[in-house]
Image (cartoon, rainbow, N blue to C red; front, top):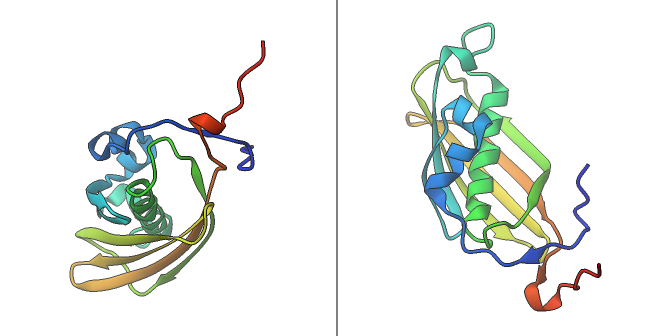
Length: 154
């Protein structure tokens, strides 16, 4: 279990977009692609595949939710120092339509509410049809600058 009240030291360059999916096996398995992530916004895509379908041949809601959550996470990563730890603590997804084929596109934006809280939202489309609206709250692990960090006593 992670304790997001523990201190974390900030000493990282900005997050490197092209490298992220390669080190995220779940997102890679789902076929997600990061099209863009900067300044608190992100655009991701995920193709429909039979392995992502539920029993009636529609894209599983869990896959759609994962794309939305990841899109907001990429928007957050684009506005915080690399190495900043954060976690989704609350989410809501309103399904507006089903996906039977094609590519799902997620457009996400994030807004910092306080030092440790970030709100995010995403709209998801299949072609020109809006299929879902996503809202989430993220908590950032407590951070310290290098100058504030306590030395380790041996």
